[in-house]
Image 1 (cartoon, rainbow, N blue to C red):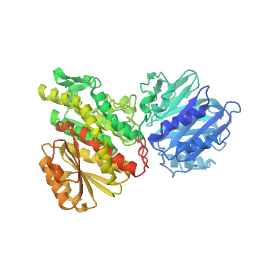
Image 2: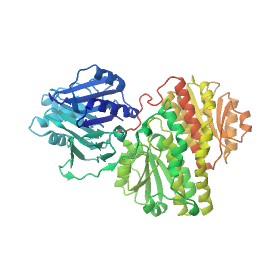
Image 3: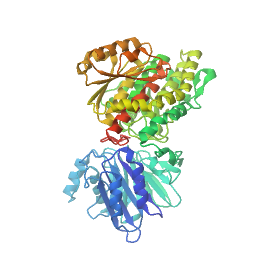
Length: 613
């Protein structure tokens, strides 16, 4: 969740650090800080601030700081200790000569803190991170180098970390280390950049290395040296950063979320581009091609994810079971390890994550790996931890997603699940004609999304009617039940309105008690095989004076007689309808939140990438 930025080179580090923090604001945070070492005096200076990076930037501009070409910076999302300046990073030792920023959780911080307190150490914060910097300091005092002190300290830590450390005593280097929390080093000419997310590097360099768990790296302006915690040298492979600066800017849009909703015309196309083999009625997915037969022969497929990616998994379950005939289960990654999951080598497990860094999903992946399942990744970020940890996988190619509330990544995940269903289905019983029909419909989606986006003004007008709503109920059946869950999640995330998604038939098993003239109910009701059933549910809500919004097929005129507002979308085959029906719900949530004056891109308490459990 938190963001780390570091710089060492010849340039003034402070503008680079502040700019890097701004690039990572979408990850979610409540405070920010920097620490730099001056070029001449070698004196360290640290500045912290509650709130947005802009507040930190103001404090930095008002503080006289000597020119510095080395520094670290951080945005914190509170875990141990409330948001406050003492709890903000960077943390430091008593003499303020050693500074550290940290993403992750030190699970055994209480034991380490008790030991250090006994040795005379005092603590200024409530955080687990301060324990780590004081522990490093204790090893430095025993005559160890900064690198060795960090290595000895992290060998005592139970938990997760991505850290960057600087010291006045060795002012020409930054020490970084990783276990369970992402870190990347950008490689420049006579300079290096450090970040928890490659987005902070864009515009500075196109080359980087990704740290793996258990690695520690000594970084100077001219070189880096990577080691294991056991002090074995490692040769790191330099990789290219393909993302351009334009891809992470808002352009002419007022919010990243709106930009990303509109980008779905292209992101959906990019997700299937070059992957359709129409003549053969199948898909080409290079990442899983070599093990496609093993997937097709699986006893079971398990999809594991959190949040929006879990909803994508639910749609994937419908697709895979319908077109491959293989039993599919969808598991919350956050719960997977906390039972005794029955998983073995006959199972194929897909781990779904936009960022590829979701801590719960990564932990579930490692548990499944221990049980010999086939480990497959489905993520959006090239070089992410899930991509590197999996045996094979598929990138969704949605492009950078900055808005905290996922939009285009969700629809791209559904496109990829459709392609996987065709690929595996064709290896089993899916006919050539049926495979071709799915692929033809996939190719038609971008134009249909363009049609839906033309309804933006209509959806905005509907949103105006519900700005003061206290609750929302979302109902759908079959493939559109997960869409109801996702629509409700979007409304909760950015508008702070309580919303629930249910299978429409479950309404009578409890939620119907909530319905009155103040309850808006959103039905996903395209003309499909369960349409008549959904119409019955609409009648039941109407009889209780609920205010009804329907996402309906463009040729459906009858539904207008039953609902207060209808949003008409193009038709497609059932399995692909969620890709279209979710877009009006994204726009509805967006406009309600904007009209409430809320921060759409950075909703309170949320982070884009949940990197701590």
